Amino acid sequence: MLPTYTSVNTVEFSGPDGVFAVKNSPVLKTNDSSMSLQLVRAGIGLAYLPEWIVAQELASGALTRLFPDYTTFAPRVYAVYTSRK
Image (cartoon, rainbow, N blue to C red; front, side):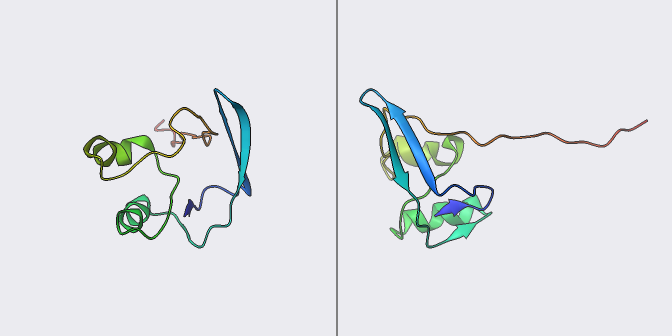
């Protein structure tokens, strides 16, 4: 499962043994992280989720982080607001 804010066909992971790429073939894309988390909890598949959303499940052992010694891309986040002048 991938969030809809990504259009990534391949994700590169970098870590102690170098860089490797994983081709994405998501069966589901959603803009609802809560739904993705529920599907992962139900054993439906893997998901790319922000750490703060899964922190409790990781700490309890309910979920397992894949490739813990590796990092991947971080989507750009923009804060936009209207002027109040």
